[in-house]
Image (cartoon, rainbow, N blue to C red; front, side, top):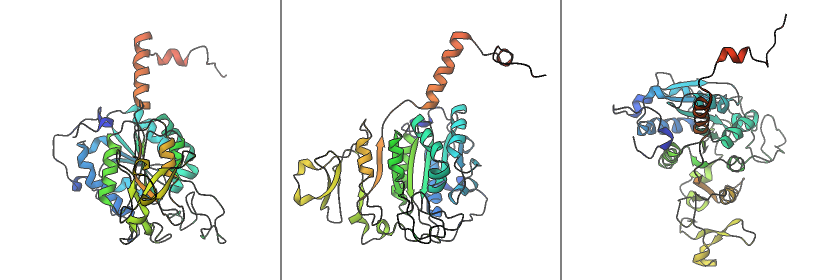
Length: 350
């Protein structure tokens, strides 16, 4: 295992060589033919051996939704939990079992609707979790209702005249919650997705990866501009830490700071070279990453950044809890459950 995986410092390593096949379960994969979840699953199964961790020390926790079938298909431990509560369940598991690598699989509906509070609190606490948020801008499992990320005017079974809800930007939500690691990738770009997974695994604390995932049955083509071979280079901004943010098929577009301090897209020919922004994923203040997350046009997807937006160090919740427990033991010795149950804050009911 690479020493860069700091988040796995307490997880037992394996001496045996593993392959993607080792992480494929014996369960029949039951997603609709052509679903983007297949590509994400394959990327994850191929990536897992890099961790160098025993399968028995890896856990996938999911909520409710199409993506939440993920634990069935990974030959690891897993839990298909309840709607929106995967981060809460995974928090308890991660804090109590530092010998485990804990991953959360969720969707835009599961995470950002009923699970919204659980998600933001896991992020602000910086629990040692890796959260994969599959975003297809629709409720797929319940057959095509609009979701918290559906664009304004979206016509669905539950919005026959078009959605009037302003959609969430998942990365903006995460950055507003002071998440220490925030990234975005695309289901069909395995190389890019695995590079982001690699960075997330190296991060100690909560790592959120939004994955643009295609639901070919109820919202087909939602991310087509980012996948079309003729258009994707002109609409996609590939973020690389320490590099100037220049993009476009002819490298003719860039990101600069506006007069009010926010970021905007400009033509390279129209600006001074020194004014082109250099991507800093390690910027302490989340304002820079937040401004990046606002560049994408929600309908046309023009100027959509992908990659690692933010990756900063802050002590993980798990580590701080363990330190408090050690301090408590040093101060007053082992706790006494019997004394606690019969203490002054309890009473008998007859």
